[in-house]
Length: 220
Image (tube, rainbow, N blue to C red):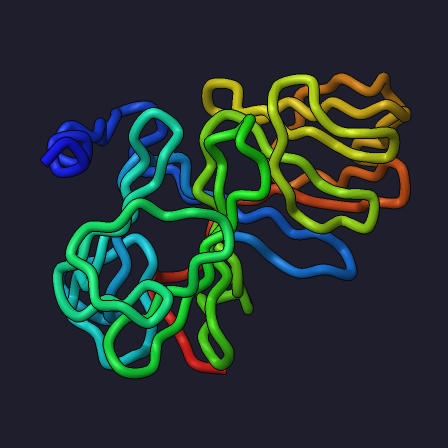
């Protein structure tokens, strides 16, 4: 009952309600950034318009991922399994394997207990437009590792050669221990990052853009 109440009280929020940005990391791939407390997943082409729309045998809105006080719940609208067991509402932990319907698999990752940012790894054969295979459930900050891999950390976390991206209003601030090269100009390791600009630091190259195209998902 307590878990149910927490899910019901989840805040949708109005800050960046329609924001859908993409983080492209050179040599790694693209990540869809969704800064919402409630994210829906379902069938591409549905009039329900899920936040994560996949070309799979799913309901229009098949499930929701809900963030409450740093915890994540998956809330089923149709058949959902977590680690092989059918669930209606389930508190997620790092590494949980989620199956939606018959063939759609998603892995939940939340590597740091100090951050409420998490990642959904789309299963084999599943992707979003732009060859996006990972969805970042963005709270306030995330980290790019030394090889450009997306991880998460707490405020001020990370080691040398890591870049921390902080959500700031309608944009992002990058913090790094080494100088940032932003659109060819060298700056300090603390810089507001415009969308569409190439950023390099510590062997990591990335660009933040608005999502292009429709919400239609695809199959690799």
